[in-house]
Length: 317
Image (cartoon, rainbow, N blue to C red; front, side, top):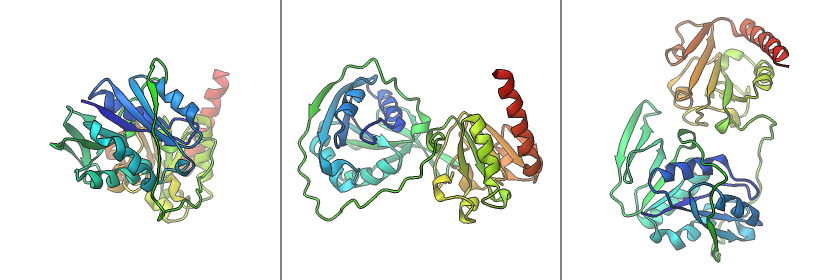
């Protein structure tokens, strides 16, 4: 068997989703090749070559690859695809954008959002908004797989000694042009990879009240999320949305504040290691998945929580 992982990165740093995907690949085979396509990212290729389990890094450097446009990356993957039994990428917007195109070109059924590797041809993935888990067996000669990063521990970024091989790039794509990228900037951890997440729902009643969550998030070094209801109400932008149509998170601690627990939201967070729910409705479905539940008015509970965290931080100092 031979495995190729398509690396997600920003031309300077390795995205943690890539390290998770390499870890998933290592459950199939211990020798893994990684494709790095970008611009002025030779140093990045060197970093990835030193990652655990990496045997070889294919490096493609071109100005047109500065931003990951599927029409540019697909022909690079296709140029080496038939050497491999498995081609893998994280099930992020990056992988979801590129891999369906590759699957169509190879006339292969893609296996998406894998959360567990059973064997080299059998995988587990969530269906029906995470309410059921399907075990899928692929008989294709080449397996095209996206994996849910939060379901796999990342590999170490040291200990490897993979060789680097340059690939040429001659894109014939003249139909798609990158215009600009707009990204929200935050000093807090990235929502999809944060170890602690505190999310707010419609129960917060306004955008201004999200300040209550921000205050606690800063004290816990947590990311801030939101339910779809809160996003639709305009309290926060859709970058914050956790759920089936938002981000899937699996933090060590997930705090749901004023969130009822609709199926759509649960699909994005119910695999969290510890779930704490704060809601004044004792019948709220969120309590069915919570490890700890507080039936209370969030406008009373959050200031008390913030005060207790201040005391704890004072003791630790």
